[in-house]
Amino acid sequence: MQLVLEFLALPFVQDVLKILFILLLFAMPLGTFMTLMERKWSAAVQDRIGPNRANIGSYRGRGLLHIAADALKSIFKEDLIPKGADKFLYTIAPFFSFMSAVAVFAIIPIAGPIGDFKFQVTDVQPGLLFIFAITSLGVYGAVLAGASSNSKFALFGGTRASAQMISYEVFLGLSLMGLFMVYGSTQVSAIVEGQGEHWFGLIPKWGVFTQPLGFVVFFTALIAETKRAPFDAPEGESELVAGYFVEYSGMRWSSFMLAEYIAIVGVAALITTLFFGGYQVPWLYHWESAPQWLVTLLQFSKFASFTFIFCWFQIQIRWTVPKFRFDQTMALGWKKLLPVALLNTVVTAIIIVALA
Image 1 (cartoon, rainbow, N blue to C red):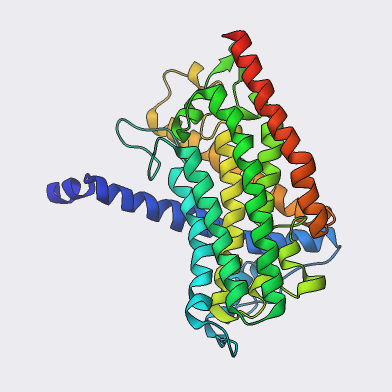
Image 2 (spheres, rainbow, N blue to C red):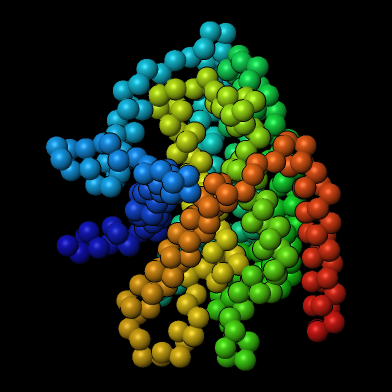
């Protein structure tokens, strides 16, 4: 038993366990559930019943069995490679999209530290730069899929995706400059700790209160980065059938779709972490006698609840906001979001200097 405890205490083993917990027990289950949640919510918006046909005997589980049914269908579906496609690039393209969606969870703390143990895979100093680097990798999956499929529709979709994602990375970076100035660090854990403070002992110093414009720009840019409606021109069904992954089938197609829904969870987790206090529970510091296990449970519950709310909010946007044309998407970024992001950065700097 002592040998097992010593083995579990190794830093490498703890990092592996953190990765498995965050991916297998949080990100991927929630991302998979989002597929059913979106289908159910879209049905409610359109006054339909939604998925309810998959069953085991007489049990249908209100559509829950469709998750397993869809997975089995993808596994056994024929996986085709189009004639004339670049087989190597065509094969690795889904990997880039999936890994960029998953890797962002490495720097997100899901609960407060207990002693030297952190509920975070890695806590790098330039955490905000890590976010930019990881989100920018997603463009490679779209570009490689579009360029390697030997399809004009896929190529158009990949071109749109690259232009849109590269453009919105500019606004994504500028929107976080205010957070860096307010909390004095690019380390994600330091930003979360800074949001644990309160004004007048009452109002939490969340990023959404210190950087409201930055929050709007960041949230908009992240939705555009994930190519979700209303910024889904790279996957425009009415013009491009399915965009850059139109030629994919089987598990490769499922990898793109699962990456999209895990990215929804990633967007929600980033918004919660950077602008809504992360795991910080407001006014919990008044309860000094609270046991550590209960504090950790409350912190994780608060983080998971806010993440789920923002996942739902993205699905709500998907089914209620009309989609933009591609030129409108680019104009919104360069003509509206860029000036707002620059103004927010300048005003934040002036206020900080004035109050110093």
